[in-house]
Length: 505
Image (cartoon, rainbow, N blue to C red; front, side, top):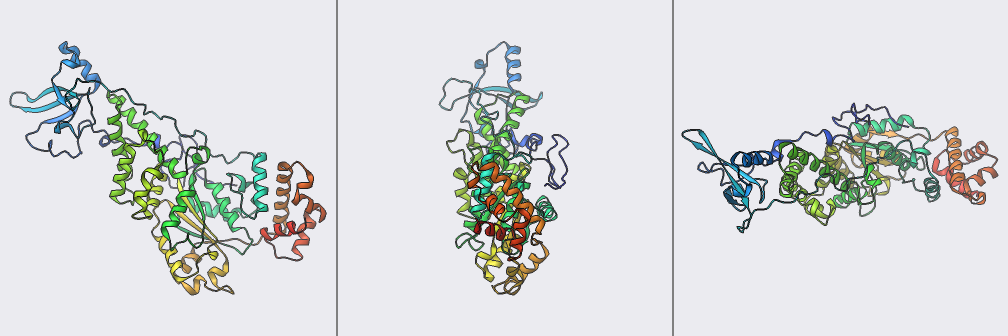
């Protein structure tokens, strides 16, 4: 079950409602900027070249070097030399073997041009650098998450085992296979993710399937969104923002992170994909302009590009600078994880910067971000905690949606007490304005639900004696009779119905 979304005009992939690019070709359509390529040095700090008496220095494209050598019947090594440590070229993306053009004012010809061959700072002979492999080395997984794939036996068994353990199935695509009804509610939830609504409360009685609904959302949005679902506890809650955001980062998933075992989590995949694609753009630009793809050149361009594409994000400049430094060292570092190479620098200062980085990298790759928090009623129920949640929703970076599940008693009050209405009214008003209510399942929904479970159990478990749900339903007289006997004793709820079947096995 999916919601209707527009499609990318180039590749046909689903688009977020107000997205400019799609998840699959955004970076390929990203426009390069001249400021990423410090060949002339424009825009880069160098106090020496800013002096009025220092002429302009710029790197000469290889095609022009070949033309010069042919024109004057010389070899590259016959040119006058300049050391790589010369202060006048420290702002340039160059190294030994490159040729520098020096442009001076001239009284007779307006400008006079001379050329120098860069040699190593120690004064040794010049040598050209071998071309680095920057064009998508060991690229990210090519396959993407599928909405339509049929369940295999392993996935079917995964669902049955998780249902018996009273937890939602977590493998991609499995929840939607047994999702019953509530199409309108799931469409509303998906629309809110598409439009990046910051806060939504999923309300339902115990056993109505709130946790399952959250995982169903995950399955539906995962083709075009990065998703992280977290259970709150005494340590991980909105009062401990650092621990909560660390849990979000650790649990973050993207379609490619699920398909590629080398990625620790979705953030690593977002980072890796971004840099590899930007490296490809930079390499293509250097080739078009006639420059060799050299390591120092690419490192500087990656640093400048990483800083530029994050410049509009709500991230402090020191963090952006660190991101740029990490980008320049990424492909020749033993640490291929952004978590290992960068996040310690951020987490020690401001945990929310991690979400800012996740938001920006996701947006660069064409993704929305869904953060899900399950069972708020089981966490700290105090004014301080509710106020922290409200503030968290207020300060979420753009492109991120927060979904929280809870019972009606948590919102309106009742026997449990400590409700939003009586404890922290601003969050109560926000919740009642932005909530999705899950009604109790109908008799027909329970019958369809049990039918699907038996089909999966038959697929996953070879021995009929081990098919516990199927055996119990047979003993109760079939699907309709099993549902009716349950409803005679209990109010309708998916979790309670499974408990009923398990008790009669």
